Image 1: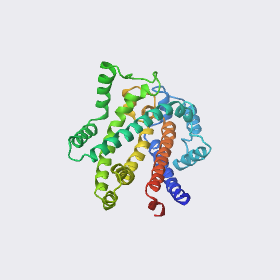
Image 2: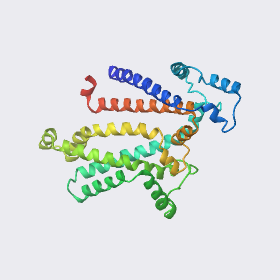
Image 3: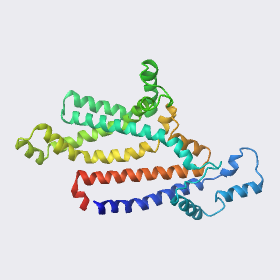
Image 4: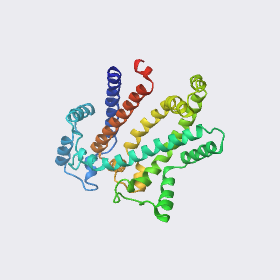
Length: 308
């Protein structure tokens, strides 16, 4: 397992470097002067422009800028915004909101999606199976902003079950409704993946052999068929976790949640390159860690993969 983990870490390192370099390049080669943009329509003296460009390394070649950023990153420095505020401080203020929202949505996806998939898979062709397939088709097809506004109107305003915006109610009350909206899309895919994989494994020879030996139906399904069916589900949930923790711009906007997605969107509008690069670097790291966790779970679910 140690060698397996080391190989996955060595694979993640070049991905992290290449992705951060690409993001850094795309952000800082955009046309326009972000320093002049800070002053709006008022022209800045040439000496002030030169000083600010030198302070933020904008007067250096792109490769040198990236090397300086990596040196700071190795010491835990994500850079500073054009207003002088550390990017790490901005991330620390926003990250807890996105973390609570993302984990709430992820657990709802995993629990509800897997349960519905197993329920439909064990009742293939029955009304339960058709209901799950039809329901998941609807939630996958409907855009998240429509689901968000409908949930606010029906569950928040008319029924009064949840707060409609903000984080004043705290966790979990303030995060259940946006987490439910955010989880709908992923839960639909998890349910379909679980159902398809479970049906495939229920027809496998080893399941028929276990049944012929007289093992209880629950043990055959849970210990044999379901465990092997979880490999594609784990893959999707691992990628989905990284996506959810990177912020959901639309959901955070609808429910007025001051999270990472909202911060990155505002930083792009204001041409705050250091904020975009610093926050995105952390999000890329989250994706790499999520994929690493998926690889480790693969090794636990199927030990043969450790030796590939």
